[in-house]
Length: 153
Image (cartoon, rainbow, N blue to C red):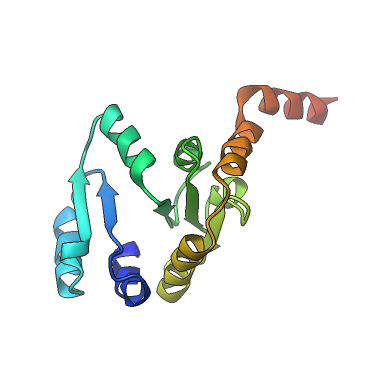
């Protein structure tokens, strides 16, 4: 969906780049899609990378986007947030428990215009990296233990 949103994003941000980390058997289809939509030169498929390279990607990106329909709790969003990065997620699965307007944006899964608009909003209205990092603390083990103890009391 991010590849499909990229033509709309590039109408406003012509230098926008999408960097995709990870592998999988869907890569040939995604490469073909990028080519068909004429954004292949703006999509970088990095494949599987080691932890150091992943940390460099987080540090260098402007925002992290994974508008997935099946994301469970959303640990990957918290990982990006430790780098102070705003996150774009889908209003699906566990992502809305982690991502909110203060630290990123939500879009309906598969809604390409809404995904493009959410990316543009995050670029035009950056979220505060310090507030994003602070948000991660709400999900730290000590905060979890405290909430659990309160719920069980």
